[in-house]
Length: 211
Image (cartoon, rainbow, N blue to C red; front, side, top):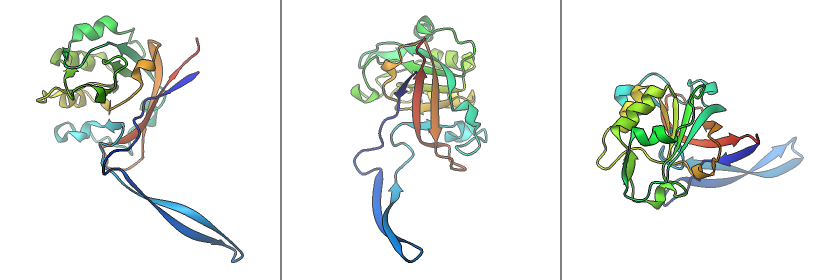
């Protein structure tokens, strides 16, 4: 078994902020130790993050980081699609996705590595994107979780509302997708369990088997 971490570390100018506080703990009046407690401040777009449909108000379906079924986020069978699109190469079509898609039977998730070994932040932002017919095709596959290094164009053309209307959760800003060398893997996308929150950082990783 090989685990591939798909999670971008949470760092960057100004956020997140982690402030360490040292405090002394006393046990039975005879023993003390110094413990570290952290105060965190960050936004929901930091690192690799998970969007529930309610991130767009019009597609709110009542699911959030507290009530979404854990079985649909943990160890989900995923089809892995690889392309090698270069910076500024434009829209990815449904035909392109279908041409590299392994059998989807039994898959609840799709992992799209459109940029090859490039990271999402190694190209001009939104210079490669999912065409409208590609989004429609993804929605028809029946998957409920999409992990992808591309989504919208600039200007935006409505990728997320269409995916959310189909009750597809999205993992944004994943890394190391090119390391998934098997056509099917198992994927985890685990957020903190916070009621009422529909966009937040997550820990994403995939498991490849040895056979």
